[in-house]
Every structure is written in structure tokens, then in C-alpha cells.
Amino acid sequence: MGKAKVTFQRVPFKTDGAWQSPIAIPRDDIQVWGIVLEVADSELSRAASILSHDERERAERLISEEHRRQSMAAHAILRLILSRYCGASPEQLAIRRTSDGKPILSDYPSLRFNLTHSHGRALIAVARDQEVGVDLEQVRREVDVVRLAERFLSERDLAFVKHGDPAHRHERFLKAWVAREAVFKADGRGITFPLHRDYLELTGDGIKDCLVLGDTASGERRRPVQFLSLGPGWIGAVAAEGTDWTVTVCNRSESHINRET
Image (cartoon, rainbow, N blue to C red; front, side, top):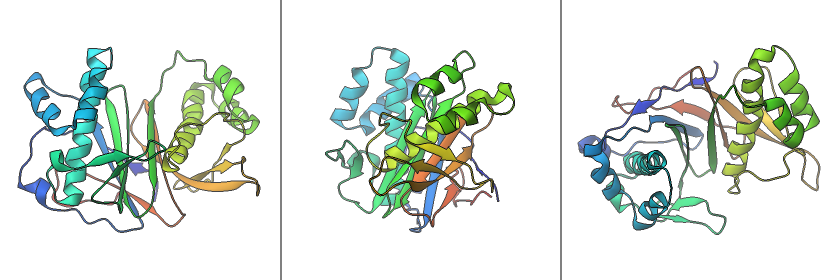
């Protein structure tokens, strides 16, 4: 087995009978969807109609037209996908936020989910009875990742970023970054500074690595992280509660879900 391979797909902003058939999800499974955030002018009103009033308001506050459209697309598609697990129409789903700001489904509390999007791509992770976090970042060669690692990350992570082929330093830096994002989002807190107390530990098995949290009173604590294969130019990771979980990549165009190995 290796990294879960994700194909980014475009989801049309329409519903049909397929969305009303609930998807089963075992408790030890994290199901991940890769999405292309494209919304045609003809689909914009349908995407907006799926959103809640608060979601539309948050999107409208964004300055960039591109960012507004992508935010609307991401949250509308999130509702479309969650509707497949709940067997309810996407616009009827009541999504509220906890005191920590983590979104939850009011009427389906056992279903946990997380959304991340960046530069026209999104990942959605869905789980049952366990908190989940997901993150992705686009590789940007113009960024001085060594300087960022020196400023924000641990000495171990800095050594990891600088070690090996310099051409792959950006990917190594982003692995250390998205691992933190995924774990912190699963914990419901988002990226939390300072970051130098924690470090990425690679297991070498190609499946699960871990983020070692060094800020606990009882000493270090290891949190499993699974990196995703997103294709050239992207780095992504999933984290969840516990250790006994696997990742399944979902394909909306199929009537069933295939487990990627």
C-alpha cells in the first residue's frame, strides 16, 4: 500500500436521485474527495441557493471576485457531498460552528467533516464518530521555504527541509506545514503558533507518518498523519482521532467508492 491517490474532479451544481442515496462510512474510515473549484456563470445562482445566509455573507465579504466564486463553490460542493451521507437535500443541512469555530452538522452529529481549499482546488474529508482534519497547499517555487522554516518550524523540521535534493525543499517544507494544519484542524483549533515545539516524524512505510506534539505537560505526543498523492505541484495530508483508521478516496462519478492503495 502507498499514499492515497486523489484525482481532482469538477462537481456540477445540480442534484439528482444519486445524491439522495446515503453513502455508508465505517467508523475506521476517512473518506476524501478531491474537487476542482470551477463554477460557470450559469451555475452561480444554483451554487448560491445551496448555501446558508451566513455562508453567502462570508463569501460576499471577500474582495476578489475569484475568491468569492471559489468560496461559494467550495461550501456549496461541501453541502452536496455531505448530503450524500445524510440522505438529505444540501440546502436543508444545518451546519453550525462550535465555540472553537469548528463546523458541525446539527442533525447528524456523528458525521464529522473538514474542508480545505486553495488556488482553485479543494479537499473534503468525511468521517464517522471521530474528528478529522485535512489540508492542501500548492507548491510555489518563488517562496523562500528555508527562511520560513528557520522562522517558524522546529530544528528537526528545518533539518528535514534542508536535507537532500534542494529541488524538493518546497515539498518537504509543505509536508511539515500541512501535517500541522491537518492535526490542528482535527483538534478544532486551526494553525496554532508557536510551531517550533512540534516536528514531523516520517515512518518510512509510505502510509502513515506522524506529527510529534511537544507542547503537552506529559511530554511528547504522536498524532498519525497520512499524506495524499495529489499530483505534481500539490501537497496534502489527513489527520484524525486515534490510530486505527484508513483513507478511502472517493469518486463522485461512480456508484460505489473505491479504496485506493
